[in-house]
Amino acid sequence: MTSASPDTAPSTPLEEVHAAIARAARIAGRSPADVHLVAVSKTQPVEAIRPLLATGHREFGENRVQEAQSKWPALKAEHPDIVLHGVGQLQSNKAADAVALFDCIHSLDRPSLLKALAHAMDAAGRRIPCFVQVNIGEEPQKGGCAIADVPALLAAARDADIPVLGLMCVPPADVEAAPYFALLAKMARDEGLSGLSMGMSGDYETAIMLGATHVRVGTALFGARNYSA
Image (cartoon, rainbow, N blue to C red; front, top):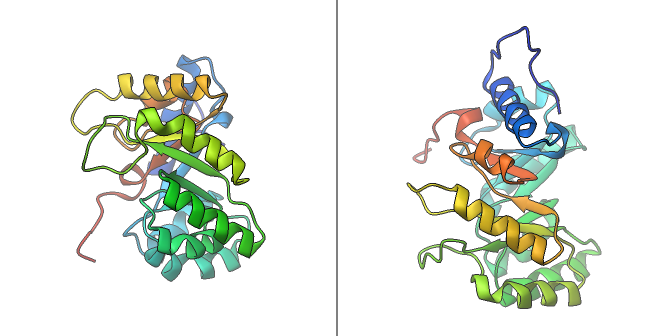
């Protein structure tokens, strides 16, 4: 991971995000290289993605399988080193498509999806690393495994030979995210997991200071999303 020179003010959104990551990592006594910047390109056209690819950035995230299928096979053919993350809620009937397309899945959150992913991975002959998504704020409208059910889901994932990188969360909106990030980090430590997918455009610096290994940043890189497109 690169950051802007200390003598040069960041001039692009990507440079600004890299500089913020480096600053937060330094405060936490961490190396910025230990933080994966997942550029979330949902609703963004290929034309908006190419400038980031031109800088050498290679980690991207998409929320929906169908949208990802329309953009990324051609881009991955051009740049085989792209790492594509599935960061949105995943329907079990899309498991095979997700396994074929993504290199990492951040939203494993229930036994039915686990079974579908395990079957799809067996059929495809590839194991896709996953994060278990935790409903850290216990919000009924959100996906994610209930906190109390996380140990059982992790055990089932290991039994199914699904590689588990760590835990993922989306804290409640419009409240301080730090306590939720700290709770997720404690849960991961208790389970012997090192990966933490947490932090988005508004709070990724806080997440890094609390141990995030993967931050999912969209708006800060691409600008406001056009959901009507």
